[in-house]
Image (cartoon, rainbow over all chains, first blue to last red; front, side):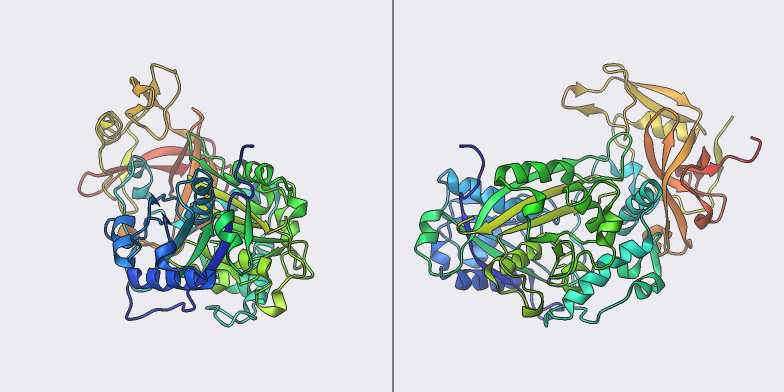
Length: 385
Length: 142
């Protein structure tokens, strides 16, 4: 058998409850989310033998954090960086590592304090001389994708606004969400343009916080009393900007089909989807690229409440997503996993909890869809799925 | 004909990476030179001095700098060196050689730049001699 289907279970999850954190540090945030996820799983620090972190870990990455956290039994360490897509990728990699016998209890964790700490800088890339001098930013690069998508497919700003409206209608039921007030399409369109055609309310929030999940072997899972979420499949893909960027599709056109094939399911089987929502256009294009609708039909798919729990075509981001709930460290992939776990466990906020969720999808994106980026698609299911 | 003109927007200094000096030297002379691989015959964009096949054997060919706007956004909240410059048009321009470059379209109000608009290359020169490839709409009848 190839692939990771059923090779591990998510048995613990914890989302930091705060959105604006003062008097703390990134290691302290990581300590809180790791201890929270372990407590949720019914496991202890001594049980952890696998660690998956990303570039937001200060100091020497996993080396510094494992010492700080007192995780002394770790024998498999991975510090793979793929932006906001890192964490669904980590769940897939943790499952593969567990299947290879390299660890049995893996922790995937992230945390950040972007409201008070400056962005962590990297060494300039070889592309920088040809891009950075033009005053680029994430929102501008996503805007270039949105403008071209509108040009080719007739997507409208009102359709993009529907993504934010649905997020806000979900977030009103989330006591922890940063923005809990429902907004209308007109309110999105009346908010200031940041980078045409994207308005302020087309953009995700900036929040502190983080989260962690615990991924364990079937043998460990069998000894735990709590609800187990089965890992069904995961795939990642990289899309370079290339010599002539095509900004109308994302790397999910590659990661999506591979993850679906590994999981043995298709888009029509998905009961709930956490779709990366750095900006409204991100969700619209990912729905197309994952096969929930045809290319160019994303605008019509999201219109008229298409993403709402209970009444929409597909329930998306029932926690309010990055657009309203949180986007810790400007890397949304972890909280996307956690809301999918909640939907499978039946512990989402009651008004948005879906009945009988069998299959959930988590879609992460790292960096900018209008340029080079990562995609990671993760499929999760019930224990018997 | 030199493409050089006095900059209307800030010209942040781009780091010159080893092997790509001819690109920046040509711009400073008011010329656009594009790198073609002698190995594959293809235009290499963004320019790079090597890849997994080994060092690139680049031939720098002068290009006329004609293109068409592929996508455009108006950056309304300029930051960094553009902090005081006002909104500007950030665009992808498809050159007639087939590559798509990230750039600015200048010379008209940024909100008037349209996808599909024919544009021509200019080299913006800052007060300190820094240069940057930008584009202007092709004038009617030109």
